[in-house]
Image (cartoon, rainbow, N blue to C red; front, side):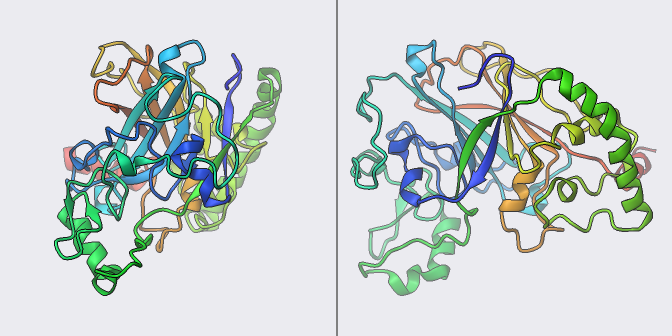
Length: 362
């Protein structure tokens, strides 16, 4: 786990699908969630988008135990997001949901000894004996197909979607493999320690700031800013930011990513986010909704993750600068298996957006 004073950084990697099942406590991106508490699965009402009221789908999860807390020997944080571009609002988080779950070492779901890294190890260890999951998205499913009664759904929307995407032809057969077209591609999240010291970073910031600003000014002058989102490198993730060229915070963000340009996550429990802009920084983080304890930063998701989600239209899709996840500082025991935590989103606001906002308020 995280060493004091250091930041852990996450990268996506392809791996065998069996490694991403609940019994191996994976950190992962995409696919369906690998639930920790196998019985008290969150429902649509817990995970619905505040804007369109449809269920959010799984984005990623982080395995983050508290070594000094026996009640959090296993601990997992999940992020869900609504894929509708209409629900993606600048610097607003109504289309995101975050939940936390944790278990003691001795619990009703998992053996106390570590899992064996074998595809056939405890394959019956899963949610099937405890709960019914949505055939489409993997959250709690209170209803089922009235015809075959073999597959379950969290809502009418996903039932109709599944029917149109293959279940109509497969209903009543033994082949009921769900469609994965609606989900994000599945990857393992691997974690490494960021090795640079503060002194090294300070030197790099001085050297890199002028270089980064010069580079992006040239992109803007050439009319090329905002055209490279599909390229998986740091420059392509930081386009469309001409209004922030002189922002020292943005320059520091660029410099900090220089050594590890493919990082999709920064884990810094109790630390501060690596902001992408000096604008729209949080003034107050809401307290835990269950124990009323203060929340602290747990980790942040970086814009580079967008490159791996395979949007059909990268210019008209989900977007963010950073996603900062705050969790209960006490890591209290969830009363019903999962408890909602807080996500704060920072975007880069373009000059034209600022001008439109000013026009609307004048």
